[in-house]
Image (cartoon, rainbow, N blue to C red):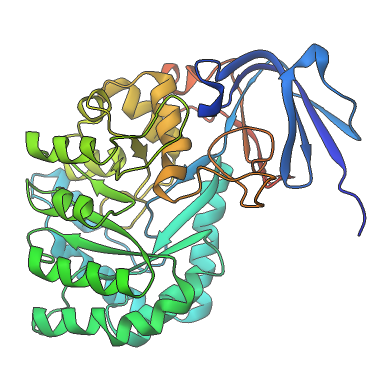
Length: 410
């Protein structure tokens, strides 16, 4: 096998590594990175960089880890513009709008769904996203959920089973839950790594959600929960009880919810990313703005010791964007996070939510979401001297180049 060529990316004005193993020294200036194959081989001061087969001059601009988008719904067809317009005119968001997308998705062929999925993934990559999760959940019968999982697995880095997204019209909720826990689960199992449940009024009750989580856990899947989006409810408590990797949305949290999430991180050393991990609280600010829900209390969660992630929730009804730049800017401008905290949540936090925060040359399980020797070479070059410009110049096209697993892809 031919040796991998090495690439020196030098003259980096600001290198935001998000590597917790560096302690407080996660931001380097006048830095360089050497990429070899799909891995980071070296990083440090540009003046001390080793020779490489090729060189890329970053021109004094900032380099971050590629965004890790840990919550998307990309396998869909159809359009929900009318629903969006009605919501902007004052109609409240209801979970039942998902049914319109289910109908359109079922009607689309495999080729069309795959084309749409690839286009959306490419859009995300062009904006700096280098690691992507997506869910099923717009099929809602055995055949269609299996198809969604199978197609998603050809494009996304990780796939989540969300048969428990909505109970289809005309079907008994408990009988549908039985289907989600048995035949449907077995059909999607070869293609998915995670399972999710929409534990919310208008979707699945606490008892039904508990059944789904137990069945999927027993099938060997990692767990996550859509919880506490439309009001306080049992989602957070269930996620912590089942040891879910994340609970997503978290707009409405009681003091007890925050305490439960914080308690799940007891023993975790956030400064160095070591110890027993807990349940990540994934905040979805683009969705919050679109649904006119209160923004998730990211500041409150961080101050309580909870690890958070930022994700796009790209979907046709409530967050039709994959722009993580936008999510980061919103988190800084409206959610009380510093630039460093927001970038960390959109990179390392997303990796934590997907179980991809650790691993290097020693075990071959390349970590994403941070820049460190042995980690996957997922890099996002900004057309700006620092990451602060993501919030300082919101909405501007600041992505200059993207490397995914060592390959220049945008």
